Amino acid sequence: MADSDRVRELLQAEDAATRRLIATLSSDIKDLSAAREGDNSDDEHDPEGSTLAFERSQADTLLRQSEERLIAIAEAEQRLERGTFGICTHCGNPIPEVRLEIRPYAPTCVACAS
Image (cartoon, rainbow, N blue to C red; front, side):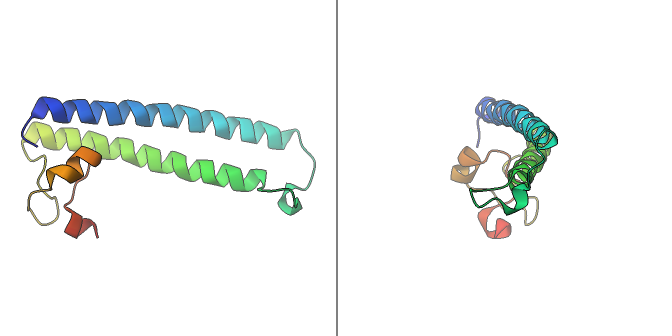
């Protein structure tokens, strides 16, 4: 991607969306923890659906992935500043613009990501 202003916009949008997701997930985890504290039932064997523990585990996983995405976004911003943005950090080949439009923080080309 040649236009660094466009790249910055994409990275800022990803950063903002990720921070909103983290806030939502953190709130959900807090709510699930509070629900579990006030409930003495055995939700591990409840035939009515997913357990609080399962839901919390899912939210924890999404939260961790979102935090990792924030790190990847910051690293992409550093590559942009260094002039290495859009170059695969593994093989040194260009990362296709289509990939960067979808995932502007991608550090690798499609072949290396596989």
